[in-house]
Image (cartoon, rainbow, N blue to C red; front, top):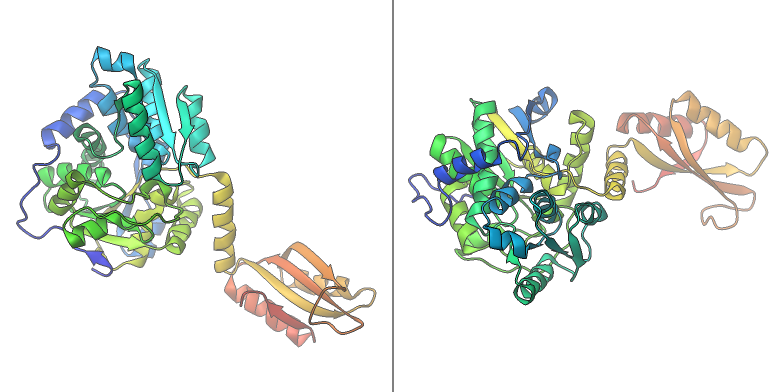
Length: 421
């Protein structure tokens, strides 16, 4: 497997460091009517693109937009009266905090959510909308986590860990029970990995019910904390790094989740920021579904890594959809540029009446759509006296269309260059 750490050999000793199948099944019964059983849809187009029989588990359709509801609700439902009265606190890059805030409000208990200062606005606003006290602290999840621990001690609040808790892991494992029923012939389940709670829970349930089904984890190459831990045999704290997959931006996993990954996860791969961006765009265009960076990680891996899943039935866990619309807009625009569907051409014209009109008429004949025009006489570096530089931002149908347009302009005598080419 390219770019992979194979973490589970045949006959590996199963972990006793987390929940068992019974705990996951009990969580499923506990969550009935509380957390949605999300659809698992077949994608004909993704199947054709990836050479697999591809299904997508739509956890982005949960009430708070991610799978984190499962673990959070499972834990909160097991708190005693005194713990509920005291209230809870969570540290989160966003999704875990949203889930804790939502289900704490539903159960009538106070909640404090500590998020890094860079947490997406949509997640901050949603948590406050559920009545939680939101504290923005630090430049990383780890700084927010340490601050939340301090507050929990000072205010006697119940700390709800985002992944290092058997109740959390068991709740996340309920995804696997649903998948095994929804896609009975599944050969592999691909999940994003941050702290490892989702992969651990899915692994526990999957291997107990169907040990032949492969569980493949995916991390962002910017923060491969589980990959490093598996390679070195212990949790390793990585330096902070920026990534669009903020939901899996965990600098250090824990012994519990490392043990679960070693026992139940068959392989782990990493994906780049560009690959995550393209996967987000493909899911918007093909599946008409919006996911965040972490949620796109399984598709990014299936598209760009040799997972050995050709002609197999594969389920991608689209873990969440809480992405800022501004970030989504940038990803879409960048993807269009990369695909050649948004292009910027710089053309030199004689500075005469009608020159620009003739240029745009030719562009229109080639069926390209003008999005923006810049007409520059004074500051253009490539122009002589009597010339002007025109920058055209155009919508096209792709690279072939761009090449036809360039050829047509040059054949008409225009000096033209594509910016970024």
